[in-house]
Amino acid sequence: MENCIFCKIANKEIPSNFVYEDEYTVAFNDLSPQAPTHILVIPKKHFSSLNEVDDENIMSALFKAVQNVTKKLGIKEYRTVINTGEAAGQTVFHIHIHILAGRPLKWPPG
Ligand code: AMP
Ligand code: ZN
Image (cartoon, rainbow, N blue to C red; front, side, top):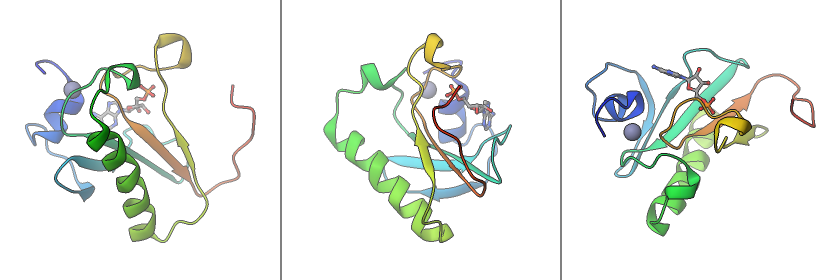
C-alpha cells in the first residue's frame, strides 16, 4: 500500500536490518524500543489492523514467525502485543506484533 511505512520496510524500499524473514513475514527492531528487545513482526502483505486480516495462512504465519524469531534469539520469556485501533495505542496502520523482552514487564499495561 502506498505511503505505508511498514509496506516500504517489507518491500525493502526503506533499508532495514531484518531480524527474520520468510515467505509471508519480516521482523525488524522497533525504532523506539520499549524494552532491551523490542521487535516487530509484520506480514509482507498490507492489512491495516487485525480487524482486516482475512487470510488464515497469514495469521498462522505471523505466530509461527514470532516462534521463529524468539527461538532464533534464544528468548523464552517475552510479551507479544497487537494494538488494534487508536484507542488501543495503534499508531502504524499495518498490522504488527510487538515482541518485548529483556526486562520485567508489568501487568496490567497502561
Ligand atoms: P503501534 O503503536 O502498536 O502501532 O506500534 C508502532 C510501532 O512502530 C512503534 O513502537 C514505533 O516505535 C514503531 N515504528 C514506527 N516507525 C518505525 C520504523 N520506521 N522502523 C521501526 N519501527 C517503527
Ligand atoms: Zn502496509
